[in-house]
Image: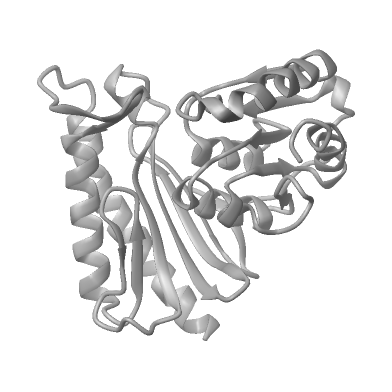
Length: 271
């Protein structure tokens, strides 16, 4: 099966690279059509166009596998009983894209659906504006533009440089998040909010950040970046310390020792 996964991920690199041209060509367009799905939750015509092109290509090349996509939801393709599925985010960082900030990505993961949750098999995260292609296959390592990524040991929390995201669409989470954010901000060496969880995880895998944490994300936000970080040698857990970060949307990631230090703090605020 691993040979089939490796071959599929090789195909995925080409599909994502080609589809990324839609985003690079449309970056900084002034006539972009934008819709508000919910308060502070936007979708553009390019989110929809990229997802449509990705889904059509994946369904054509892999009709036996299902698809879970941000804008169109779940589809089992031609075989509803398939346990293998693609998890697709056509544009992670839509708000950045709208405002001309080049921290955006296409994120696609391949996973096996089990009764206990998703088993991640591979992932690709591509920033077409900066031409950064992150990729990983379970057991085969993680790469940035073909160069292998190996996580470096992180410094103590007091010297660590972290990434996070604000759950601005989930007011019920803010009461827990804000005091937790304040505590970590005071305890760490620095923290940034860049607006793309998929890229934040990849930047952690590449050593730009020492760690990343955020609550209440969707599977397509964390699946591809999660396996890329794992394959670079990082630890990725949920807020209970378990491995169900794709299902819960609550994620702590980075160097294992640093993840443990963050987990000890976050558990005090998120039960």
